[in-house]
Image (cartoon, rainbow, N blue to C red; front, top):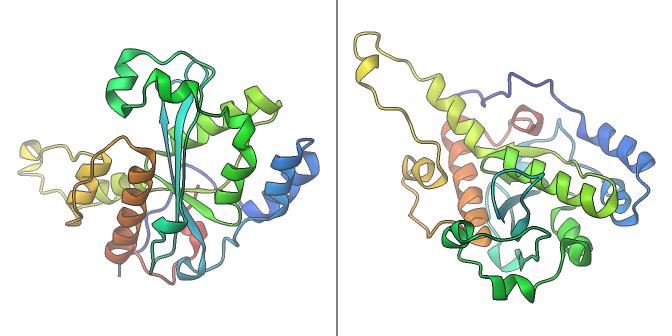
Length: 240
């Protein structure tokens, strides 16, 4: 079994210790409660670690200028995905939605006008993630957008461990042996969620729906561990 891809550019964070520090520093009750629930242990096995696939749909790519329009969370383990226990909400952003983003995520002005602000459902969102390691496809979106969304509303950002299936796929593709006589003919590997899933024989889903993409990410991570890792791997070998 191949060793799991490592996040070589970052030192491994002791998230249990970091959560204790953040809980002591936080002055916002829902955020403090989330940290006080603790993080799964980094030296725990992947097979014994509660996971939650997380996906956000947003009005754009810049968390300082754009906002979140929907949140999807699907709890799972390496053996079982539990969509019936998942969480999905359309969210009213504090930023305008332009027509381009509507064409992508298909969430309309009418839907967001009747939706709650993230501040109104913060307890629900944090409960869905509490005590689990979040699994995402491209951590820069989920980590940065949630951090800035919380910062705008509460004066504090939010931090928690993430496993990034896109980063895993990138490292897997980079460490494949390349024949120097044929490398110039090899096509660049797509890291998009659907393309990554296709390489493991997983079915196509309609993209850009937060709940469906969260489910798709959970399935992808299960496949990545089966092909490139082991259920006995320490979770800290995979998280950011």
